[in-house]
Image (cartoon, rainbow, N blue to C red; front, side):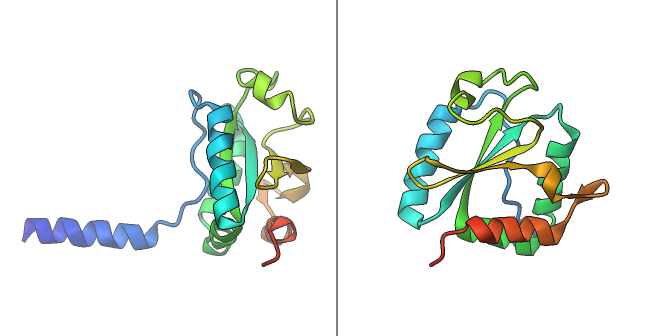
Length: 151
């Protein structure tokens, strides 16, 4: 009976959890992460969403929470993007070498939209997506849908 209850609990949690944006990994390797993302994006006909920030950034956490708690936004991400989180400090280190090939962010979090080959399509200030102390769903949704591959 105990095994059955554990199984049911796991099953319920798997249906309730639809988190898409992973936590930022300080020890991650963005070069390897991007290579993997390019392979997946090519195979699945998706864009790559690079989200630059870190655990020191309140707005970075707000963006993760905002999207992860909204099933519609998560569905748009799952359908259209491979998400890569890139850890940096305000001075762009660590991972400065990786980020040197992109425009320098003026704020964090910062979003770069790439095609499946890793070519930059858009550099997005997330302040344009904010509303009060959070984010504006209609603006975030419009941004994600605009850059999605039209299938």
